[in-house]
Structures are given as structure tokens and as C-alpha cells.
Length: 260
Image (cartoon, rainbow, N blue to C red; front, side):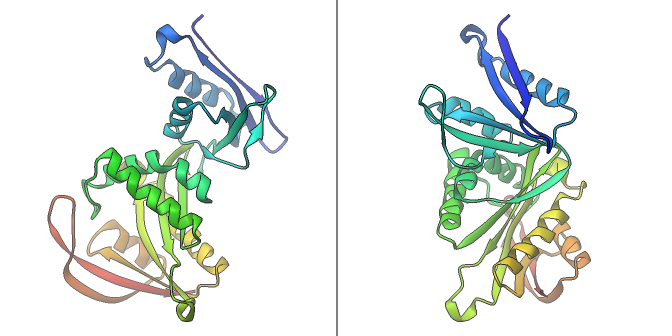
């Protein structure tokens, strides 16, 4: 025996807690931990949400769980051995969208960087190295912490697969409006309704923050244009060559607005 994982029901609402994930040192970095995690998630057929606790000093373990779509959730707790542990959680199935606080946003930077890289081939997203992508998302987390930006992310069947942002950093006398930015969904999940769920949730987030007018821009002829038109957004104008894709191709940008 070289590995073990355990899971227990956490409450009556379908939340299950992963309590152990241990792999013998000689066989680490061979994919066994990922296979154990996938197996236990598949076995917990009644689960609606998974959670776990990870030692604050265990950087490698934190990176592992963040890679597999877990995000920081809730306060730090003191364990039985008087050590500190971060809480992590993710939904088990279906399409789920969440509004992240600063701690959760910071724990999402690697996964969101992967989505950004995957989207760069066919969207107006700059090509970036993993380090550059992480720096970008760390900047987003800082703005979330400062109350300047809202970051929504979405899971598809337990995989963190998309995000959208709402820029609320407007002057005090313009606090009736906000800009929707950077709708990203990894290519494999674009036909499953995640993008629409993110857009509907960002409108609700805008309402919660007292914003009644939203704006955004989209590549002309792209999937985002089709989506926002279907959701009742109105076109406000076009600028030729406004956006350049990762491949260096200039594209027209369409500007849209929606009154909530």
C-alpha cells in the first residue's frame, strides 16, 4: 500500500470532508494523489460540495488542491496538533458560480492562469507565461481586497472552468455604473452554459453593489457578442481594429450597455 484517501459526511446538506490524502514519498509526483482524489470524488455520489483542511505550511499540498479546483474557504482554524490550517472547498457537480473574497481569489491564480492561457489562442487575451499570468491574477486579487473589483468564478462538474470580473472602481459621482470585463471560459466548457451563468451572476452582483448601468466590449463576430445579445444587451458602437488577439490579428470591438 502506497497511498490512502478518506472522506466523511460533513453535514446533512450534501457536504463531504476529505480528511486524509497521503502518498508514500518514493512514489510521489507520479499522479497517484490525483487519481486517489478523482476516485474519492467519483465515489461520493451524494456529495454536493467537498471541503478539506490544509496545513498553512504545506505549500505543495496547497498548490495540488488549487490545481484541482479547490479554493480557500472560510477562516483559518487550529488543528488537533495546534497547527494552523486553511479551509478549502469546491462544488461537486453541475454549474456553480461564486463571488470570491480576497483569500479565495488569491488561491485561484494558478487555475485562472491556466484558463487564460487556454483562451489566448482564440480570444483577445495576451499570451503570458505562467509567472506573468500569476502576477496578473495577483493584481486582480489585490483589487478584490481593496473593494475595487468583483471576481466571479464558475465550476463545471467540479472543475474551475471560467471567470468574469466587474470593475466597480468608479468615481464617487459615477457609482451608478460598472464595467464587465474579461469573461473567460476554458474551451472545453464553452457549450455547457457556464458563460451564461457567469453573465447572469455578474448582473446580480452589480445590483448588490447598487450599480444600475453596465457596459462591456466584445470582439465583433465572436461568441461573447452572440451571448450578450441573447441576454438583452444593447449595442452602443463599434471601433475598427480596437482589439488585437494573441496571434496579432486586429479585430473590431463592439461596445454594449445594459440598464438593470
